[in-house]
Image (cartoon, rainbow, N blue to C red):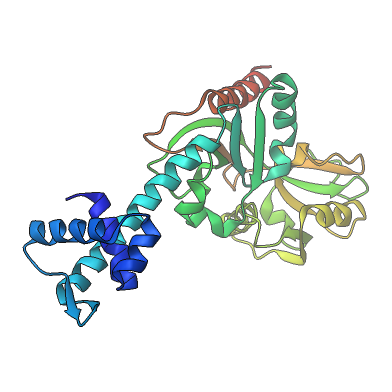
Length: 295
């Protein structure tokens, strides 16, 4: 079946006017009529009824029109998919992260070391982790292995990321090397709001420890830091996220088991070869933390 004939049919079916349809596709009315006749002969049915000088799409034509619309919708989708691939330059990486402050330092180092590579980094809110259509827009996604829902994706482990709490340097716990979650049940917590995926880590930690936390505020990262600095409350974090809090007024303290540590992992789509730039970033990320742990 000729795709061009189907395209001519679709236009004629929508206009139901031979001359106007021919003008739209820049061919003569006899040529358009001939194409439709060939299509009708191939299918063995009439597609239009002639009413005086006018034509009208009949029942057979309506059936074909529905199928043709789906065919051309798929053709458009194919063109858009390949157009998207062509638009992305080999030296550009689209990276999604769950906790952007955690990966700021290593990303900055990579950009400085590879000035020819453009890194487009986006922060994902928690609900986007359940949307495969959004996740597939990215070359790489960095998050805790337990937070990522698409188990079929390729992945490589980056680093174990144990839990920490953040306290003011004047807090009574500031001299401790380690605390347990159950010992913190009466402490006022400054929690991240539930739109941030790391909030799940805090909720899971409290559940594992069997406590109901005393949450005095739910905030973003910046306000959380300010409230901890002022001594208004303490915050739950991970080791990597705690290192990203660059404040001399805050002390990070290790939290003993439970909870389990995060298993920070980089994911990419299955069955799709990574572009060289994405491979370079992935390998740099893994090597950076492997070297940090080794030393």
